[in-house]
Length: 325
Image (cartoon, rainbow, N blue to C red):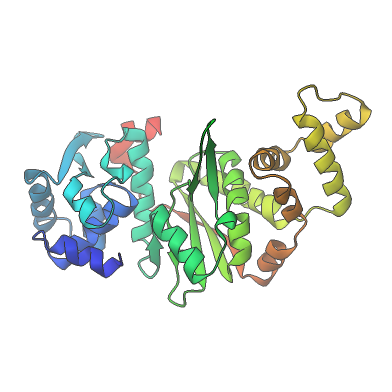
C-alpha cells in the first residue's frame, strides 16, 4: 500500500486526514507516542485539540495510556488490530505491549522521522525489500539480513535492525538511520557489515546517527568506527592472512603455533571481531568485499556520508524510562 492509500483507509475510520497521517506514522515507526508528537506532526500548539484527539483514541480502544516520569507525562500505545490490518500490517510487532526502556527508543526514532518530513520513509521489512529489489534491482542476497536455521528449515529476516530508511525526492539519495543506544559502537559495526552490500549498490547515501543527549560524547567513536569498518579497504596480503586466520580459528581444535598467535594479535581489533561474526554467517564473500574500494570512493566523493543528529528532547519527563534504557 502507498502512503496515501494508508492515510485514506485510516481516515475512513472517522479521522481527519491530519489525524490519519499521524496514526499511520506512529503505527509504522513506533507504535507508541507522546502528545507532543501529534503537535509536531500537525504543527499545532500543545493544547485542547491534542487532548481531544488522544482522549478519543483511548475511549474507543484504539490506544492505551500509561503515566510515566513525574506522573504528568502520558505514553500512548496505539494497538488496535483493525487499524493495523487496514494499513496491511495486522501482525505488526508494534501492536504488542512494550517494556518502558524499549518504548523510549521507539519515541526517539519517531522524533527522528518527524524531524525530517521531506523524506519518504520506509518502515516495514516488506516495503524495504520490494523497494530495493524492484526499483534499484538489488539482489536479495545483497540486502541486510539475519538467517535463522533449524534442522529442517531456514528463515531469513531482511532489514533485521528495523530502522527507518529515508528516500529523497529524486529517488536516488537515501538516509539510513541508526539510533545510538550504547557508548561503544559494537552493534553499529555489525549494522555496517549487514548494510555494506546495499550501500555499494546505491548511488548516494547518508548514514545518520540519531544521538540522545546523554550519549553525545559517543558520536566521535561512531564516526571512527564508520571510517574503519567500511571506509578502509584491506590490502590483499592482509586479506589472505585474515582468511587463513578465520579458517584456523573456526576449527574445533584451532592451532596455536606462532603464525596463529601473531595473526590473533594482528586481528584482535573490533573491526576483525565483527568481520569474523559476519564471515561465519555469510562466508568468504564478506572478506572479498573488504578489499573493494567502492565505499571508500563514495566517501571521498561525498556520495557516501556519515552525519549525526542530536535528538531535540532530553526525555527528562520520562526519567525512570531513560534510566533503564
